[in-house]
Amino acid sequence: EEKRVTSKLSMSQVHTYPIKGDPKRGIPEEILTEFGTRASVNETTGEVDTVFYKYITGYKQRKLPKTFSWVGKPDGCFGKERIKGDRKYLIVTEGEEDAQAAAAILSKFGGSEVRLADVVSLPNGAALDTVTRGEIDFFSNYSRIYLALDNDPVGDKARDEIADWLCGFAEVRFMKHDPTIGKDASDYWKAGKTKEWRLMIKDAEVYSPEGI
Image (cartoon, rainbow, N blue to C red; front, side, top):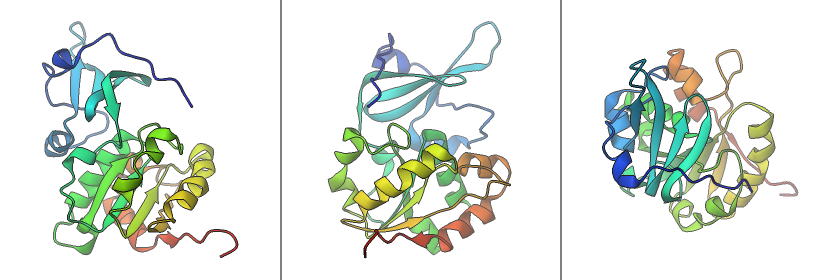
């Protein structure tokens, strides 16, 4: 498993930064507030240079475009803290931006059955690592889990392994992103393809382990 790099920042320092995200992603402020996402701004350019994704007891720090480190001792799945525990479906994405985009898409369809799904991201990308395995009690709360991993070689490789583990305690379904639109929920959100992403939930394929 990839070794985590510890940030030089403290939790108290991160808490001084405003609720804010990567402006290129276009995530609404109310969604960023739900997830507790913060960002620092470069004093010279005035642009966001680092985004902090809130986990239980810590943050994942992303220095744009894609250098990661950790503040505190984050644990569990991203987005877990915002869950109230009264929904039976869960959507799992590969990254924090995808989880926020998925939540933003679902928020546009309030009152529908689709809105009855919680959303989290795997903590370390498309990998069935020890942190993800440690979330077995959390995943067991759901009767159906949708895997919305990236449509790329890394996501494809991890999909079956993660599904095989999850199907021990929940029905697992695959959401397949159309590469002509994008490889993940963030791409769909930026492209304005919210209805198309919603339909992917309806059309999700039920996973069946080999030999069953």
